[in-house]
Image (cartoon, rainbow, N blue to C red; front, top):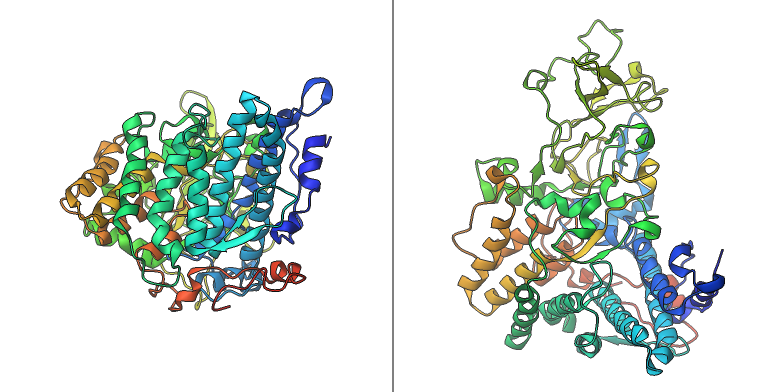
Length: 602
């Protein structure tokens, strides 16, 4: 049932923000129901504004736009026995090489959903303003949240397209602002609510600490935002503000660093004490997919055993670039980063030592070729089995199905007579049916991957950072894993960077080592303290801490590395620091000449 408040919010024309994308609609009934079936205007307004964000950050929208454009991830066409995947009209190859056009779907879909999200937030402000002015205390708090959310969404626009939309109500035409004017506007919106916004709503809502954190992020990047094509001129005033606002969070004591790094990206992460702001995907807001978990993983991976997980798999999408992987090797030298740093890898599949060597085996369950098969080369695990996490190299171990791509998961009986699931080395079948005898090779993730060469489905090390949701009712279709947008580790590392740019190396080093020392759940993998710090080291450290969290592109620009060459990318045009504005948006605003102009270089 579409309730009146949602119909009102959606019905208002999003073209005011130059949005020309057709959007599917999510109905959040539990959040919108009010007395006698009427919509409660405050909760309804908030639900409509927050509810669109999971769609905005999907892997083929804003998440993918940020990741694929950086030196962290690459998504070339993949060829194999089943044909070609991910060619997609060069959407991902041109994004990675910084050669995208204004019709690239990563750009247009990201723009479309973000403009709609911003419009919903402004529509919520329309509803809440008269209620707040009448003295409704709940509306006052909700209005502060929406103003903070509007500022945050404008900061995303400023970061990606170099513009912000200044708009006080849905009946107004947005004023498009850039550079210093946009920074000042976003700053003023955060500052207008920082002293009055709630302090107790949790990570799924805008709070005072979230505003502190986003103010710090704004000041940290302000030099780039004021002059996106030049060499950033970081000012002492900006850096001191970063120190102030990050200090407010750290000294407030409301958050703590997670001892287990990967707990931050699990089903239960909503209550993790490190999270400051995240997309709340629990309950009625859990209707988004495990997109951040499955996008990079093998299409032959069935990560979780059990009847309700039969449709859960990967997509053979992006892989880590060899250049990004090299940063780990540069940091740890002869020591495997999996042993040196708890953030790189978490071993969950406890393969018996006598089974680890799969050389000489063929992944056929029937001995049709006279080869040694792996039919009995498995170990047993319960329904709580978890795949390995982090950056995945080589061959994973996971459940296998009766007919490989169909049927139930294979089981066996342990010594006590208990039925458990068989865990095999991960294998692939891409041609002719899906029976076990059609399995043709092991999925061996190797380092080499590029756009220029043919890439197999197995090619490239993979990102297994986000947990495949245990609470999903039908595999990939739902997830309770919140997408983290701000956490305490970033607050520490933002302050460390500000200290470094203020020439206070000792304080910067202390903050970096605080984060490194906090990952104590697996003591042998707790990263050792650094003895010195530089901007180069800090840039590398941010990569280790925040990979697969949409931060790398912004970091590369701020640290002066976005014009560097890396895997399959040689473009050096500073104009490409900003994405092109979709041509559909420019065409949609063509009745007002000069209103929306294309960014430089496109």
